[in-house]
Image (cartoon, rainbow, N blue to C red; front, side, top):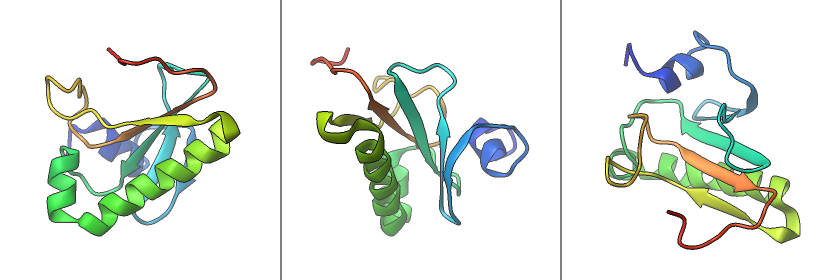
Length: 113
């Protein structure tokens, strides 16, 4: 999609601090971190929401969560980490390209907000 910031990052048009990249998934540092470690894990092909992704490419959805989980374990260690996937306006999604927030490095509270 021409106006999607995550498509532009995945395509190399917009710079980002890349932590992981393979043919299907890219992980970057969040520009507005909400924890000492805040990573965004993004599928390279455009899918608006996690619901769209799981319906269209369930294996890629699994890879997305797998990469996010590995990065969370690497960054959160034994203390743990949180994965967040906001979906739709009421779910707090602000970018129309599915992405997983990986938060680590501090105690998380519940409910999240």
